[in-house]
Length: 188
Image 1 (tube, rainbow, N blue to C red):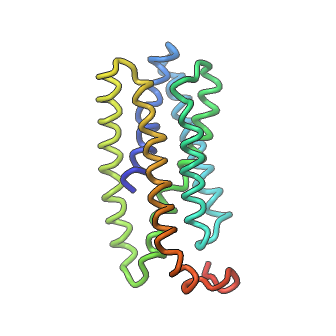
Image 2: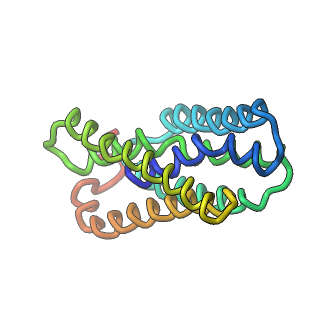
């Protein structure tokens, strides 16, 4: 949750400033960029919520994290504002499922725990990630004299999230066969 929150909030917080600094855009253009990212997140959260079953969450988180890396990696190099808007929308699609899917996946992986307390604990880890990575992005941008350099934190956060999910997936593979012997008997 720490790195997922960091990647999500870095884009939410800094994309308007990035547009204004790098594209000599107006505050309106910065707002449109933020709205594109937010629109992708809304579509990503609700869309995947309808399409994915509980036992598919690890796949969704992993592949969304990898897609997020590929989508956000070229953002510092983009020079066309409308192409940037499209990339921000796609980044929102990839980012959208992280927060609710991670919470639900953790609740599924830790049976017998109080889910309300778990959601509070996970959110308590995500919110500091939002603050830390937003600060770090500003610090790096200030030190480098260019906010573009700091945008590499976003794919770094997503790559870390994908690696953590892959590690947990690999570590729990023998248990998966016991928990879900076939997809026919897998709880939804």
